[in-house]
Image (cartoon, rainbow, N blue to C red; front, top):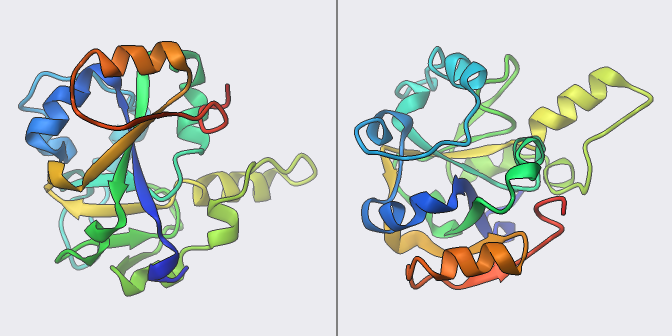
Length: 197
């Protein structure tokens, strides 16, 4: 993937967190621990991520993690919670910041590769990351691999400043009304397809 092909990045969060995020930014796991918040993260995955250290960098939990494409296995696992969650749109400009890292798949995968941004986007398989589906009924191993690739990440040390958050996606009009009522000032777009609705 080339830098000019990256239009935006995504952050999946419970809608109730958005006012805090607009004040404090998208925080790393470590920094978020000191603030009251809801989480969509799975404990098993967080336990795995807690053991990962970014090569030449810091522990994975000290980075705010953004997806290159939020239509991925993580969001699909939360599809029944679509009324309570949203996907924040983050400016692709964050990849030009210092010490940002790109992964070619889920950062907790055994086979993940890490690369310095923005040139590190070259390790991302754009076709697989933006594929509509990652299922391969004829080949279970390929499906597992593709599911991990769909979760390719951009890792930002400590936090993503609020100024980089440029909007939000929700699953339906009801979810939009909930987010609009928080008066965050974000432009909110309904995208049923993104949420598997």
